[in-house]
Length: 345
Length: 154
Image 1 (cartoon, rainbow over the protein chains, first blue to last red):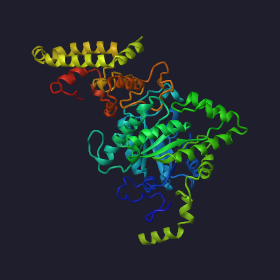
Image 2: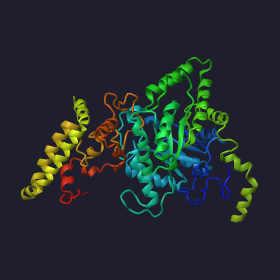
Image 3: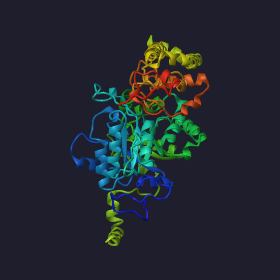
Image 4: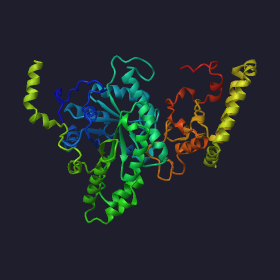
C-alpha cells in the first residue's frame, strides 16, 4: 500500500495525528488493513548480505518483520543489529526485546540505540528460560518482566525519561507491542493478562502459534467482552509444521506451543507432510481472519521462511494490497521518488 | 515438601490473608512500643521473625516488597523468571512451570488463590519492577512504618 507522503526508503515517515511512531507498520494497522507480519531468525555469522537474503524472501508479502532476540534462549546475532540493517533499506522491523539477557540499564540503552537507527516497532517479551537454549549454564537476568518492560518503553516515549526519572534529550517514538499466549493455562487469566499489558502500554499484540481455533475463539470472546480489541491491534500467530515429527519435537522442546493431537494425526496421514503443514496453516489463517477483533496474522516459519510468500498469497488475506518492499519503490515509484528528490533540492 | 506447604498456603488463601493482615495490624498497633525500644534494635528481630514464618509458609525470598495479598498468597519471587505481573507464555498444558517441570506455575497458583479470595480483579494491579535495593529487608516493617524507614542508600 502507498502513503501519499511516503519518503525515501529507510527514512522515517511523518507521524500522523493519532499515531505514535514513524513506522509503516502502525500506518497499515491504523488504516484498518489486515496486517501480515513474519519472523526473521538472525544468523550465526557476520555476513550482512545473509541478513538481506533472509529478509528478501518475504518481499511484497509482509508489513513488518520481527527480529527475534535469542529465541529459545539460543545465541544468535543481536536483534538490534539485524533490525538496524533492515531499516537501512527501508524494511519495517519489529525489534524483539527479551528480559532474559539484559537488565534495565542495558535494555533502555538498546531502546535508545534502536530508535536512533530507525527502528519504529518494539515487541516486549519476557523470554524463554535459559534452560531451553544452548547455554543453560548462563545467568538468567529477568530484571524486568514483559509488563514492566512495556511500561518502561511507554515512559521513555511519553515522559521522555528513563525509568529512573532522568530526562532524555529526545524521546524514542516506538509503536509498542507485546505477546500473548491464549493456549496455555491459566486460561481465564489470559484475557486479564492481556488487559494488563495494554494498560502498561501495549498497542499491538502478536500471539503464540495458534493450532486450536476453538480456544482462540473462546479467548477472543473474552477479549471482546473486556473491550480489549478496541484498545489494541491483535495479530494471531500461525506457522506451517514441516512434519509430524517436527510437530512432536516442537511440542516437547518449545515452551508454550500447544499442538492438538488432531493436527498431528492429520499430518501423519498425509502423503506429503510438508504440503499438508502449509495447507493447515493457510486454513488456520482463513479461519482466524473471520474472528471479530483480529487485526492480522503473524506468520512464523522457522527454517521454512520461503513458504511464507505462498502461505500469505494463497490465504488471500492481503486482497489486492502489496506491502512495501525495497524493489517496489525502484520500479513502481521511480518517477515519484525522483520528483520528491527534486522538491528537496 | 516445600512445594506442598506452599500449595497448602494458597489453598487456604483466605485464612492466610486474614493471618497476614492481622499480623500487620498487630505490628502497627504496637508502634509506640517499637518506638520505645528503638527501630534499630527491633528491626532485625522482626525481620528474622518475618523471614522464618514466611519462608515456612510461602517459600519467601525476602525481596522486601511483599505483594502476597495481591497474588492470592502465591509468591511471585518463586517464579524462575521472577515475573511480577502474571504467568509467562511458557506454562505447560498441565499447569507446570516451563523452567522447573516439577513445580506448579506460581501464577497458576496465584490465580487459584485469587479465585478463592474472590478477588480475581486484583490481577489487574501492575506491580513495578523488583527493587533490588530492598532485598533482605522486612516488608512488614516497611508496610507498617513506611515513613520511619529510610530507603537504603547507594
